[in-house]
Length: 242
Image (cartoon, rainbow, N blue to C red; front, side, top):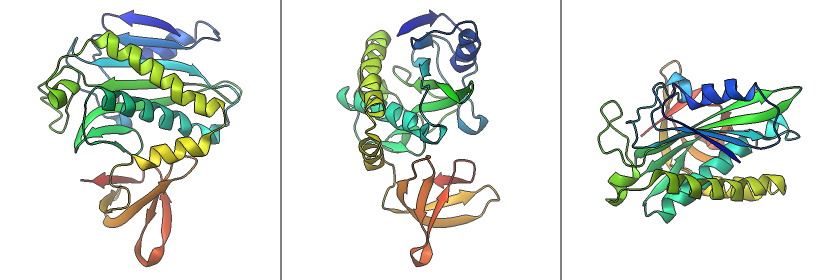
């Protein structure tokens, strides 16, 4: 993997998308910055990150040959890699909030944004990660936390990044091996609120209750509703309240 380090940029995902248009490399590329000034999250949300305190990076990962319908397995692999790193560094009560937020308790410690690169089919994905490491004060994200807040320790950013890369390839190997069910089972085992009655809000503002049972192979959330009815939802259709 080629690693590109920047002092500052607006968004590592945007930078990497422009950067990779200039070449056609077989190798993966990781771009990380100490100061991301306009980080993006799901639903157009911004990502708060204090300069020099956190890991904000993006990975250009070739996935040529992987069907578009299986692209969510990249999200699963990334989520599991981050989960394992956090666990080994001493963070407690970790879970994956569908589709790709990582929580410690009920506080967000990591966000992931994955974008597809289409060139005659699914060619690659750009995986953007914002992982809170040493930041202790969050002015605009009251439910945010970090490794430092959860463990009382200060971490070396490059050491955490190197560990993350190792874990990422561990789980990507499951995709290469075709072990999709193994990956899916591990991901679902770590889902926040799985098997519990939870409240959801639709885009129109309607509230309803349901139980998270699993995630479809294409990444949709499957809920058990009243009368044993099961229904699939995608990210744009509802929000989990907690």
